Length: 119
Image 1 (cartoon, rainbow, N blue to C red):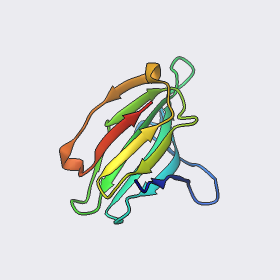
Image 2: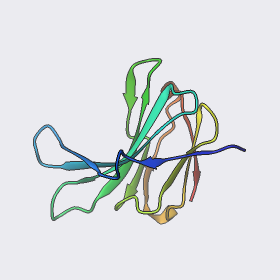
Image 3: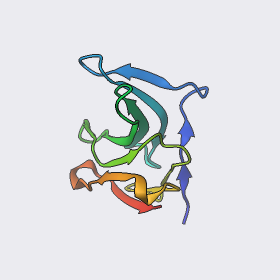
């Protein structure tokens, strides 16, 4: 099995953005292109203020359809230690995370990506 591992964004700096209402800040910490370059997965976390914990998640951009898919995977807290690796052009492996922190997991066949969890 030949796995392609995720890399930190650019020079190690994180990308930050706000939601539409400016209530939550989203920090993108890692992105990884599929081996064929047709999909881009991004890992990040959101911070919505002092009364909530961070939530981590991934988005998958499919260049063939031009669509971005979110809500596929979510963790309670920051994604410290989480690893993303492409097993092949369509299989993404997420590993090294505490299964007790898993908030949601949804496969979406239209994303063109099969997600495999290895906590």
